[in-house]
Length: 364
Picture 1 (spheres, rainbow, N blue to C red):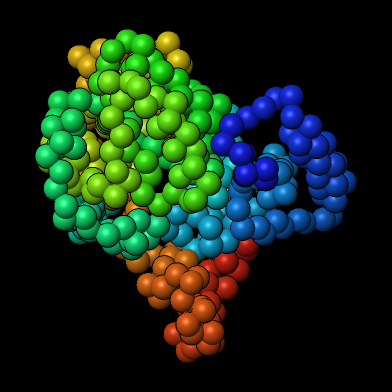
Picture 2 (tube, helix red, strand yellow):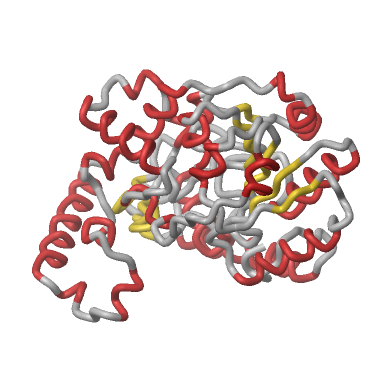
């Protein structure tokens, strides 16, 4: 999906076969590099935990119980040490939400939970803090459309992902890619005369916008499929009280639950242990939940807050933050200030980070 920049999988594509061959080559390379000898120690440092050139070395290191660390690419973290992952769990730079639990939230500071509640409440008003940096460029849209509002009220909303984003970032997914999930959901609602509002992702790339246009054209004659503008803010959607919000693993899960709106998800997601959404386990289960609103339970508002507190704990407690997160900057800021990394506070933070990583190595 990412290498070829395509929205869906074609198992007969030679491009895919070439990637598979390259994957075997990378596996053989790192298996030969990492020899299991008692008198040698190996350390793996990387950035992402995905794609064949990052993911395969990380998986091999974890399998062999070798020190493995990803730097700066985790959610709200400066680095992530990969150990004691658990059977059946894929190593990931995004962290290990399979270890999340209500019990672990009992160890959180009250101040952290208070901050999480304020953050979640603000997100529902389209105000994003540093825990949601990728949404910070979303602008509030003050235009109210009565036709749009009436279509949303009491009806389902399909919240699209960017078609070229990473669908398999978590452990499993009901559909093979976002395109198939979108197509089969829209087609099911069209055939079964179910009113469905479809909202494109506000941060999608140009290629993804073209895919949306194709879907609009394919279902232009359907009286059951209503397309919402990508610019409509979530706060306006919540205000109109849709009957169900549908996503694969979107961050809107906690927000919708906080606003007392049921959520249907089509795969593994960070809040899966908190039961704040209805998570389909297969296609049959997904379409059953999609067709029958009564089967979708409303998630716990309290659990949505606790999940937010645990998931974004580093941000709320200002611990183990990536440098740009600590500076409240983005990599784009380097274009305007090329000396950003050479400033005293940057150097001081980097030095502290190095000492923390050294401690991790010594204590492994």
